Image 1 (cartoon, rainbow, N blue to C red):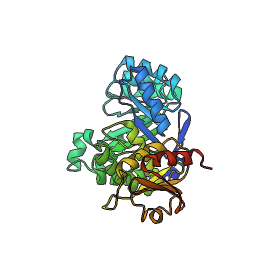
Image 2 (cartoon, one colour):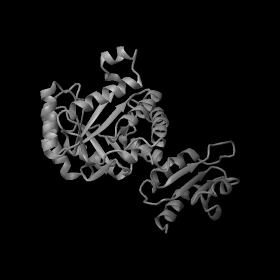
Image 3 (cartoon, helix red, strand yellow):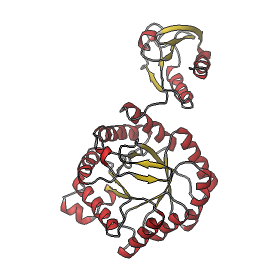
Image 4 (cartoon, rainbow, N blue to C red):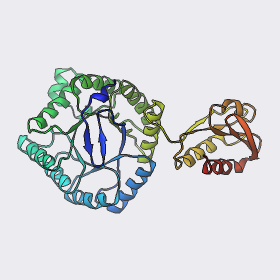
Length: 351
């Protein structure tokens, strides 16, 4: 059994995490939460892409009240992200948040923490305890001579203890660092010390390219070790890119089935078509198909059929034309500008 099989089961809205339930994909909106129209539109697009839990920032009363309207129009659990102001945590809970994310260390003293926990307990709302390397307490930095995995874990468990002291145990823990190796080690230590479900991510990972690589390495190792119940790929870019990366990470690790996987060859001197453009268009095209297949995009009509033989379907380019391939066999030759349409027609009728 993996470590995630032994974590507590926590209900978040209409989803359950922990206890061996599937690892769920999270993201966060980057619209002003009080702009209900834009926020709902972004969440619905993220839902369509495969997001399963969404987080919105709640910096003020107007944003807290907007949660009630947003909730009416979306279909996935809504998490309120709170910093510093305990009143916003309570307001978010009162307006229907399915979970709140706080750092009890910066929410105020024991009375304020108790007030937040009381509101969460009354409605059965789980609390995500979040600790980041950038906000690690000065005394822990001094104790461990820097920001270390051990310090992150001690900080997180200290915050968990604050909430447990209020008589509540519906929690999810999140410890994040932009240092991939520190983040991996911190999760290994934490998983041995607690059975609360863990939300995993590499914070401040970077742009779409660098962030996806760092997240793939970090999340790949952590998830492979059986640690983690929800994930977020944090990217400086369109949140839709976070979902695409997260789905591919889970699929590559064998933790998620379904969805079309695109494989493509690197370009070389034999390539006579716009392979890079074609591969990107194919990747966009297949997002809307609920199929569990592999699509190959190859740049060479000479070796393409052989290279694509392990894929269910594929296309291979030639000089102004291309081949449509199924299970390694050429089934059709079409003009280059008709390749995408030919592939779409096959996918539309895939049985």
